[in-house]
Structures are given as C-alpha cells and as structure tokens.
Length: 146
Image (cartoon, rainbow, N blue to C red):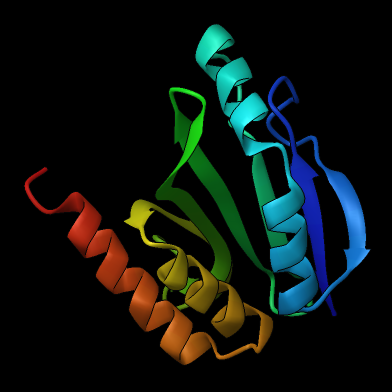
C-alpha cells in the first residue's frame, strides 16, 4: 500500500503527519498545494532540524521517497532535495555469510520538475529497478567533484 506523509519545519527528525493512502496524481496535487515558500522561509530563519518534505512510503517494500521543494527570495525554484530510504540484504561483518537486512539511504539535489515527477511516478508504480537506476545516476551527478 502506498501512503504519504508531511514533515514540517520545526518537527523532530522522526515526526511526520501521516496523510493516508495515495496515488501519484493525488500526491503531486498535494505537493503543489503545500506552503513551500513559507516552510523554506521558516527553515532559513532557524536552520535547525529537518527541512519540510513530503514523503511517499511503500511499507511492504520498506521504501521511502522524501522530496523537498527549494525556494529563495520568496519564490519557488526549480530545484529539489531528494532523500531515499530502503532496506537491502548485506552480509554481516563477522557473520560468516549470514545475511541481514540493513537500512540504506541516498540524498541528492535535483533540478527540473519533470525529473521529480518521473521519480514520483516510478516510485508510485513500484518500478524500482528503473527507480534505483535513476537514483544512482542522480547521486553520482550530484556528488561529482566532491
């Protein structure tokens, strides 16, 4: 089941407001209606805690997609901050081949609304092979030159 949540400026790191089930079109409408400019202004003033984000969650697949719209000078930009969480099997260090599930994360900046929408669609449609490939490309692009 696909659900979504909101994290606002001033919330604790793990605090979110659950919004219920969703699909990609409903999520994108909520994304457009969210007060991004005000939330960005508040974060710029405090620069404490998490930035505001809308979160897509697929609990069955243990995946989350966090999206933050960036703004400056009172206007939305065409930039987004993306965070992705998932679980993956890993051999334990001293486990002699024992496999355990560990949480993985990736973060990156992205420019372009069509790219953000495409990631959202891939996530909502559970097209994770293509989703993961695009995430890897964006992470590499964002971290080039580090």
